[in-house]
Image 1 (cartoon, helix red, strand yellow):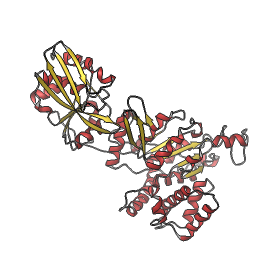
Image 2 (tube, one colour):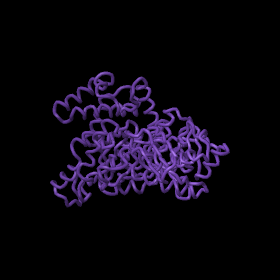
Image 3 (tube, helix red, strand yellow):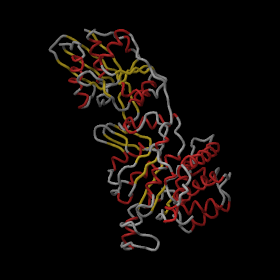
Image 4 (cartoon, one colour):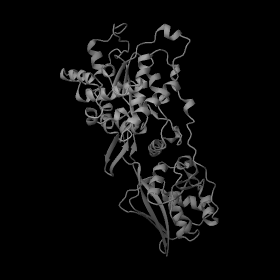
Length: 506
């Protein structure tokens, strides 16, 4: 009797657990048994592994093969265990040594010809392995860029099973690449110079990027709402290394790294269609639980165009992550929590036909249909929106102007400077943005001037604002003060914050 040992990782959300794979080859009727709560995709690994081994000119053991995956109580899913099972079988068959895989985690899906295909969740799997004391990993070549975000580990990348076996027999280690995080995609992003006019909406976008405040843009079609929202990431500061790792881990779990570089330091922007389901927005699934759009927008922007057209309950499902910064999904396999700290930007037409304005020019909608249309955005959701900005149609003079507006680079410099002021103010706290100031601190350590507080108390007494709304105004006033270079919000800052929140003229 001989036994082979390998290690892999089972993921539940973005957290992983080490799985020890034991392979026993013994006398008996030739068969293959897989133990340890495998799902359907993992059960099918038998045929993939057998074909890959034989097509790499290795001998499949014509005996009783038993594969045990521990811990046995932990559900295992996906095809990322193929390579580790194949190596365990060959070790148990005594055709390759055991020693090279000691303290090594193995990830990869096998094709029938022995090619190692990419798998989802490599980065969170490597993080879990490193936390468990494992310092080396064997992964697919196509996942190399993502895996190099873990420089603490020795990363070995291979294109096929034959190369892995050659390394285990000869000890010849493939060349490793250095970690190279660069902000290479900035130039490809859209620029605010492309936006004609819209000074109010441009300023609101700058405020939103500075303090992390949620924004609603209301205006007729063609006014520039989508242009402004899609350019907000271009004025946000580059992600820190820790933030980039979190974003890459979430995108890796969802399998969405094909549209985003693993080493990107740019804030992500996710723009789901207004017909998207609730599961696609918050995450979920029956067999494999994947993060939704709100988690893919972590540390970035979640932009939903035509927001009133969303199905009932879809936007309201964002209320909990807007408050907590996380989203918890409960299924039979357990509770999974994904991070969801995002900047929410909604765009809406003023009425069903889109032509409604203050004077009602060209609009055929009744006052009831206008109220009903915007009423699709529920009160509790709107109470969580910091700014509501009216985007008016661009005038002929603005379209004919030859002088371009401020570029994203100039606006981003102001945003970075204002964020630096806030970071210095919160250096001893657990939060970093003005939108994250706890309500208790707003009433004690971060109160504006007395006249400003008196103004808000009057609005609260007349029930023109809720308690949550008052706290939103206070947080917004701190961002306006940072942009204006003031140490504390004054009455003008609070009044302008109130106007931005109520959607009145500023």
